Image 1 (cartoon, helix red, strand yellow):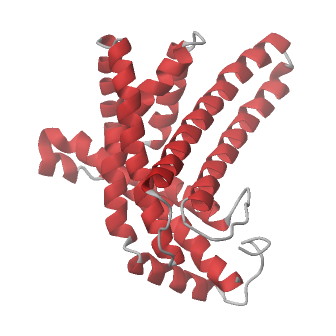
Image 2 (cartoon, rainbow, N blue to C red):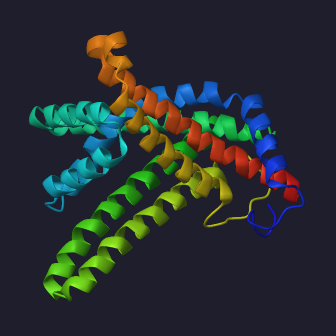
Amino acid sequence: MGATLFTAHSASFKDISKSTWTEVNRSDVFGRAAQLAYFFFLALFPFLICVISALSVFGYADRGRALMFHFLADTAPPSAFGLIADTIEGIIRTGGPLKMSVGIVAALWAASAGMNAVIDTMNAVYRVKEKRSVVEQYGIAIGLTIMIAILLMVSIGIVLFGNMIVRVLGGGETFVVVWSIAQWIVVLAFTLLVFSMIYYLAPDLVSRNWQWITPGAVFAVVLWVLISVGLRVYLHFFHTYNGTYGTLTDVIVLLLWFYLSGIAILAGGVLNGVLDRRDS
């Protein structure tokens, strides 16, 4: 890559948009997003259980779970969030050490399989052939999964311990307001970092140039937020899924949210690939 993907390009915004859309179709982003939705669904519950279990080591499992549920309640469609919350609560009530261990293995397998789908898409976008060994591919996929889990726990820790520190210091109302804004800026920065790591490590490129924030990462996060808000608004005013899928509505909505989220993730990588080819 060049010095930065944010560098001004000779092509217009319209040309870059057209090239990105063409590449989205050529790389079968919509079909590959369906693969991601399936693996996201398989990995979600064991992944959340693993995070809660890790937080329980520090004695903050309940508070960490509350923060995750609060985040999901604000982003996921209400019916999908209800399914997630009920399932997690049921697993925790009937859980044990063995179930937690199986959950870790299941989460790593499903999440790494999803990451491999991202790797395939990024290779298609950059028009390179995968030459890394299977072991190396799964190592990268599992490594990314673990890094995402760590960043998620760090984000929860920032919100959790930050609020505790604010209360202890007693910095006044202004300090509380500033921190309430700053903590979510930090979480947003971690989210952008996750996307940048995925776009950096996924394609099998000969030369790489690390960038903390890329246009694709920004685009993916913005698109994901718009998709989540748009889906919530649609489901609030239109209830067609209830009549079509009946008792399966919650599952279908969750899969749809995962599918659209997968499109956002892959589309961000496509944009980076398009800009990279124009910059090279």
